[in-house]
Image 1 (cartoon, rainbow, N blue to C red):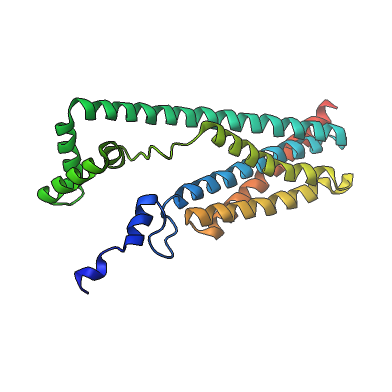
Image 2 (image 1 turned 30 degrees about the horizontal axis):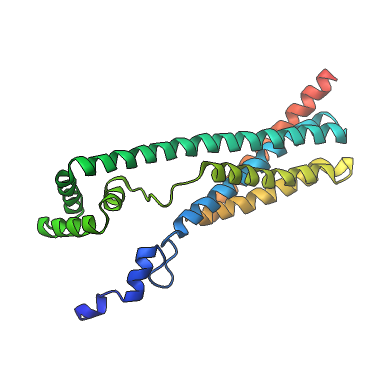
Length: 254
């Protein structure tokens, strides 16, 4: 293979600069990894909605067959869970974004105060990755000329200033995924006749958990069968326990 065979084409160089895949079957290029993280978070949020609200409605169904009581309890769990998920995600992402902005501001100040020291630091970072001292210095110099701040944010802090997560979007996505998951046990417990509510909900929830477990494992690259068994067995035990608690205390108090 000649050296020309490994030189990237103009199209590949443009794709790399814009964050797009540089060749076919490159699943994690550009923003794809970020989208996979969002999808994985959505699956986990839906899973939380399924489990949380299912546990509530199953527990209440163990104490009473009153559809209105079950609906009220399930709705309260859905709303409360969605709000809690949204607030938690908003606070978490806001803290992360504030930290990243502070690091960007500090890096800008350091580049303004001591550009030579920052160039030496960037050279050292690339040398630590395996480049020779001369090559590392050349790479650092060229990247600094192209964009000093972006070069340091990438190599030193692993931050993309154009891709900071929005707290509002994260909160909204978290709440919506929770609600989407929570609707399934709500419908499963309310639509069937009284005698079939609990078994139908059990089956619907376990099937949904198997699907979300398989999706989560697939997105994370882990063993699908093991993940499905883990989440289904855990979900079944949790539902059985909450139903037993509801039945026991509902009967005792009633």
